[in-house]
Length: 502
Image (tube, rainbow, N blue to C red; front, side, top):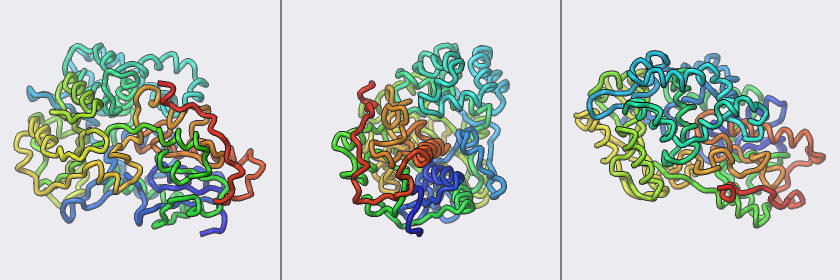
């Protein structure tokens, strides 16, 4: 470890590594500190059930990984990473044995939706054609989107609408369910504003870049990011927990790839009382109950086309999804929850022994829930794949507390980095011109709790590091180093808490 760094990054998930790569590319000495013995945060893989069965510990499917402006700068193939793109990004089975399928091809998808084909093409065609523009618009702080006013006027109203409002443009259960399933990744009641934005972004990503995943497991993403960072001269130090500023090496700027609550705890007296209160008041969303299955054969879906998708949205009609997500938002467990399921081993034989398979599934539950709903998850899968339970060799259940214990960023099992309710979808973690810089000038937040939020895209870390680089370039004391006992740079918080903008 050097005696002094330009930039210290706390946390080694995709956002933390993206922040470090951004700083190192600018010629800044950089180190990543990781509390655990393994890097990756929620982007890791492990044999969670049986020997030879490789499960993704957290993130499993990566629809934004190939869309992200930052991730597009990474030479994946040069480092041996192979992206797997199933023929269909998403399938959504219904009780009558049919299924809505979002194929990689937009026209094939539209044709499969029957009388809604024309509407689907008119809604998603322009977004797919201008997908780079859509990504740029949705993955930047609000103030930067003002630089593209025509885009804001063209797509803004659709993205800000409730998912249910946009879904009602369709006439069939299939099209409405497909759109609602995409929108339910917001982990919000689908009647709330901004939920349509998730539906449009994720739905168009299927046709623009696919919903890919890395061959061999999610840990491959982190392996490549770490290799890129080390190639730039950056350091990575594991088994280095940061509980206070005294645990940091001297540095000119610190990017925390952590939740605001953790930043407030680490910063302690460096923050004013009001600034610390704002960070601690950051709202978290529902948690998840996750189940990893090892099976001795593929899931026996009633509809064969479902086996052509890497991701399956299990939950029935749009109306059922609306009810399930509203129930969780009210602090209760859904009787028939929306289940997100990934079946990577159908397309990646490295995930399981020959002839065997892995299944990754979770549903939303109230934050901090202590109730094991794995039987409910399994029942939902059985509903559309009778006999699934007979294929299970073993299973591992992870409750919210288990997820948080494994990755302290997942407060109460919240895998999205915080609630997206109301203006929190666009003002993260607080509403200010530079949302990444905290009340202490040298401290920046670059986790999923910052704009643009959850997902393996690295943009939160990249944009936080960009802010840190601007600070380093402009600050008179850029070379003074960070003394953990120095409180001279502490300033009162000038930001507006996103709660106050509800």
